[in-house]
Length: 235
Ligand code: B1M
Image 1 (cartoon, rainbow, N blue to C red):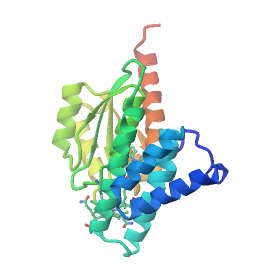
Image 2 (image 1 turned 45 degrees about the vertical axis):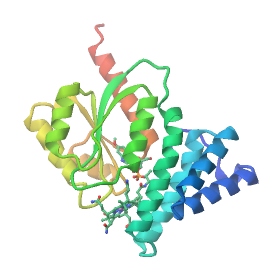
Image 3 (image 1 turned 180 degrees about the vertical axis):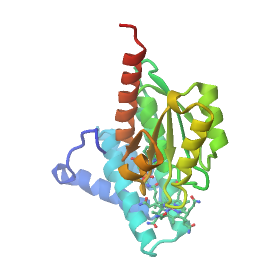
């Protein structure tokens, strides 16, 4: 995961490589108990949550995604894999969200209307919390009204939107246009992410930043808060 140092896979001890490969296989098979067990074992071996996510979970889900796209796996199997991944993420949650840092800003996040993919969005939310953000998670299938109301209610500094489908990513522009209509666009920085997005798409819809992964989202969010503090601190 960009921004977080993890040892290159080939430099890991063989025992650990095998453990991560077993976790990927178990995730593929949707074996939640085994994936959770693998996560606990890696933690007990002193491995970082970011390494476990990268090699045990996200790498496993990438294989699921490839085979889903190629028609070798179907929705029920992918759902099982997603459940297994979520169960393991719950084990990592306390480690990813714990922070000694004071709250540095409020971040409203959600998966856009029509889209129910939430694993990546949940990961982003956990890591933002760990970095000291107050996170308001609106969940999946979030419409523009809900985003707007949450930005107002929580006086958000940042708004994050996730989309995993080429059919739902255009909805991000609908939300950004509504922010403009409601006079909120200058008050909040808009960060977008999700597998089918790109830097060019983010620019085209008028977002402030495209975040390739959760680590980038944290880096960018911190950078925007530092700029905001610099602008509002009297000289
Ligand atoms: Co779906 N699905 N899915 N799916 N699914 C994809 C996205 C797909 C690429 C699979 C494929 O064909 N290879 C494909 C989309 C094709 C396209 O549009 N181009 C697809 C499809 C077609 C569908 C359905 C239409 C299938 C159907 O019903 N026939 C359907 C749509 C449902 C809907 O949303 N309306 C559907 C359903 C599902 C499940 C419900 C079975 C399940 C979701 C379960 C859940 O999320 N609770 C599912 C899954 C699991 C996937 C894949 C396999 C994995 C997604 C995932 O969790 N990845 C996915 C294949 C793939 O992406 N390669 C696929 C792991 C996660 C950690 O990564 O979400 O990319 P990701 O998040 C990253 C970054 O993208 C970024 O940071 C994250 C962490 O580093 N990021 C952000 C994400 N959001 C961010 C927000 C930010 C910042 C960064 O805000 C600031």
